[in-house]
Length: 284
Ligand SMILES: NC(=O)c1ccc[n+]([C@@H]2O[C@H](COP(=O)([O-])OP(=O)(O)OC[C@H]3O[C@@H](n4cnc5c(N)ncnc54)[C@H](O)[C@@H]3O)[C@@H](O)[C@H]2O)c1
Image 1 (cartoon, rainbow, N blue to C red):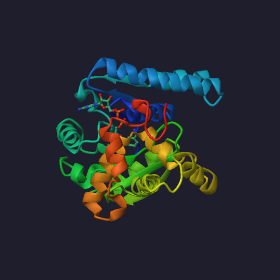
Image 2: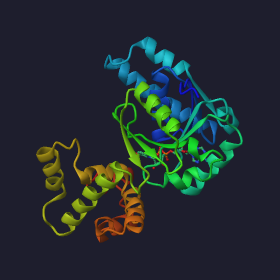
Image 3: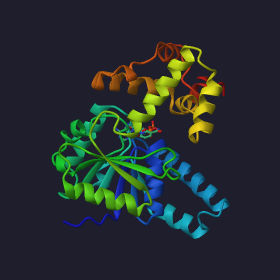
Image 4: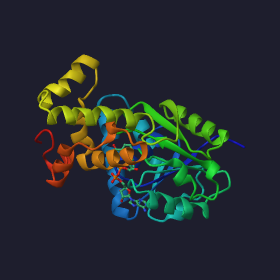
């Protein structure tokens, strides 16, 4: 079986989808970017164009590379248009039913050897794979935001993922310039589980008035070299998303580490969701 991937389908043109389309096209792949409506794919393409423009301004991308990358991306709101792709990466909202439904539908559209990848940051890959006709061709490809700048790609091996599928995902990840880690399907994988443990503990420390939000963040930024403190990062990710994942990990793993702090619950109930709502641990 060939592992060379030249045509990539990306489902969902939001924050992660447009980033995945961007890096795939920049590294020479044809990309079919799918979302529910043309205005959504247009919005994704506009974001890719803006990011490439910044790259040109900073002399990290040449005007020719920018033009070539944009020329490799086609937009669609018809799912069957991704049928000819060798790799399809979904980046639709974090809902298991939605991801399973897409993989079920794709199973009837794609070729035998097509790899279906999910960019989920916490859901069970094994459960998502179970909805596909060829679950051994399903793998987790967990990218980080912003995709064109963050180096890490966390590959997640579902219970069903075959060694060939993992090898093909690895080869693709390396081709698009990412640094890889491989993790077994386990709640929160490696990155989300560890990141959230620190994030929730920082909230508990704020609750206990151990230090101010600014000083808790500075402790990790200056003492441990984190590019951004855990509370600032929570504001950026969205406190509602943090809470959802904490509830899920607490349910799945049962360790007190992931019990959602009262302060987090209260802030979400009050609509203080972080940067997107104008206020979280900081004001924006
Ligand atoms: N935002 C992050 O920092 C981040 C990081 C890593 C992983 N993730 C994961 O990536 C996935 C996407 O997150 P996001 O932040 O890009 O979300 P987003 O809301 O920015 O984008 C989701 C896109 O999916 C589209 N969509 C919804 N239903 C669809 C369907 N049935 N078919 C095709 N498209 C559909 C929406 O129109 C939207 O454009 C989630 O699973 C999330 O957990 C997010």
